[in-house]
Length: 226
Image 1 (cartoon, helix red, strand yellow):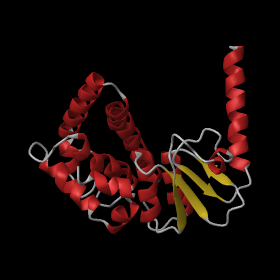
Image 2 (spheres, rainbow, N blue to C red):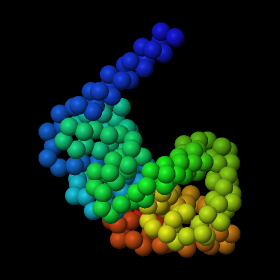
Image 3 (tube, rainbow, N blue to C red):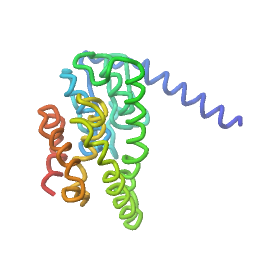
Image 4 (cartoon, helix red, strand yellow):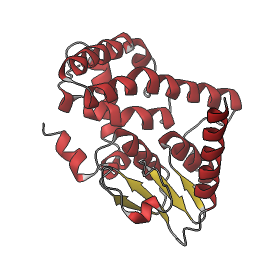
């Protein structure tokens, strides 16, 4: 029990350091992996909001000292704005939507916003968890996760059919969360064109957005060719 309390206290102290660190930056900066889907989500939200910011692509396995001074964990993405340091993709997306309210990427009423947050949480738990297994597990476990992700997406076809965007008539943070995952499917060998054309149609609507094209790193552009 004492060890748990000690760990929790250290985590809070570390968070306090990160949040209050003096960045001495006049421009917002997003440290991003060029291939990580979570980093891509944050970049997409940034471009959807039309925010002027610097994007610094770095190797997640070799983070620079400039990042480690602000975020000792070196996790990506990390957003820096003056004295603020955020290092969780979903928190960054929420912050951008609140910091720059137009155009809104959440509906304005609290109930709808809470509902959207729950949907993103389910996407992370059910689909991004499998994406992580595909990319970071052994061959057998990766193949199983790939099969499950494909089946789970096909099972969700009615949700993609109901509206132009995911469970909404308007583009939202939910779509910011989904687009990077769907972009990576062909490079992973997951083909939905015959079994779930409605998902392909939805994905193409997202991929044609100028903001999505701007959000792509050079490495992510290459994914389309694989």
